[in-house]
Image (cartoon, rainbow, N blue to C red; front, side, top):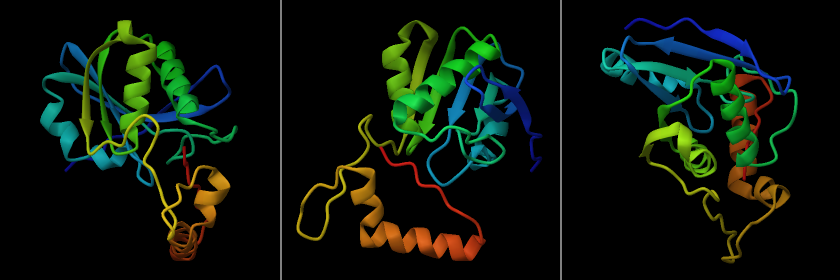
Length: 173
């Protein structure tokens, strides 16, 4: 399987987005990855679609070679990054595929910019408000601080930081 080269583009908000591009189709499809993965998640899917679509697979802010100059406060930040990305590439009309945490980005983008979106494809998506997380007593954890203090999240973050010997960023909305 061939690995696609990463390209990059400067966005007007000061972030540099890395992305992969493939395909020769007349229609455009943009693939939005989930949390804790990159656009490489789509490596097996891209060759299957590239004869029918011109495909872009960006890495969201803070993933792979995309910068993380400004902290992410909500899904809306990633929606606006996506808008700046398509504007910078002069892409006017396209379909969006969102996997897992990429789903809320796709849903929110399509809601905010419906004139740009031909179709949406959601794979194992969470909703636009994320998923409810509860503590051991059934209380909904609402703030980032509450979520990051939750034992399973804290333990996962610690394990990943040790395993990969680097800081791991969690984007919880």
